[in-house]
Length: 71
Image (tube, rainbow, N blue to C red; front, side, top):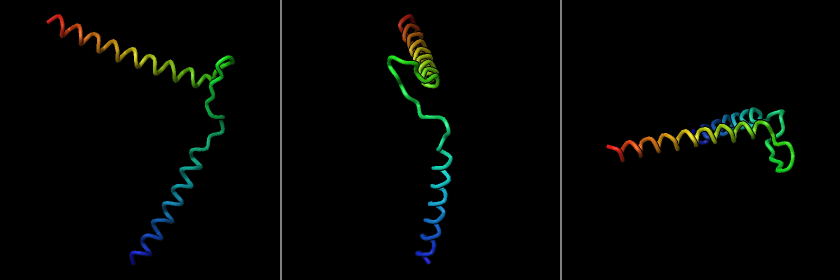
């Protein structure tokens, strides 16, 4: 009984794995960075997003630090 359950589970996991692998395949090429060329626009957008997020977090920490120092 335990063996049949593990075999059917393995079958399901294998099918799910194949479906996940197929879903991961994209038709666009992967991101590439070319230092002297034209960088991938998706990479540029990602960098801009991360920079804004880091700036926002830094600003919030500075405001909290100045607020606690001033009280």
